[in-house]
Image 1 (cartoon, one colour):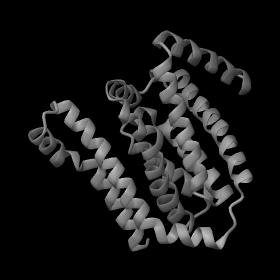
Image 2 (tube, one colour):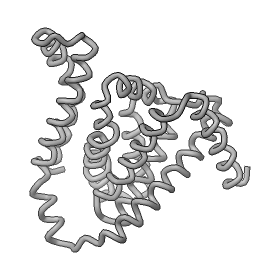
Image 3 (cartoon, one colour):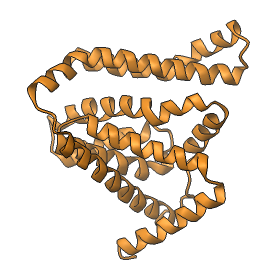
Image 4 (tube, helix red, strand yellow):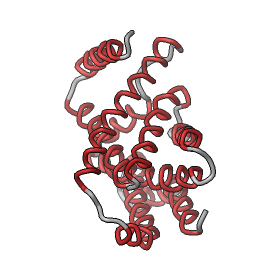
Length: 237
């Protein structure tokens, strides 16, 4: 792994843990409440982390663009297809978790993000835009990319998807996160452009954010039941 990649990973780690030091400092220096200081520092740190990562990766982005011609029609088609594949994989994973493993549907992580987003709308840029870029660069381009050099696609995608799932802090939903990570890796290999899984990831997260903010809990539950029934029909359940 190149030094550039290690710098990116260290930047991501710094973003994740910088709040331990700087959120209390922001609380001390400003009239913000303790909760608001944590939220606003999270926004600041993710924006700063994205800028640093893009700066670190700039030489590689430039080289990639010079080496091949970007076929946007092809990439957009794969982005749309990847979104449907991600939903399909997520549906299968959810069915396995709820029907076979008895795991309660729903993500505490998602609910927490949405509660913060309702209180501080600016926070929406993290799950909808910034996090997908950082996560795809790290988990697909770097981690999956390095593994793919040493093993076949299936094992490289499976291992990187496992790491991607664990990092989200909900081990009970490892199948859901892992299935999405596997799809993102597949799309990346097919297009050879990290921007494509980024677009899929952004779309997936943005749709969740929009639905959570615009629908009531009852409407969301009804939609999930309808999707589950459709999923069972499609897989022959």
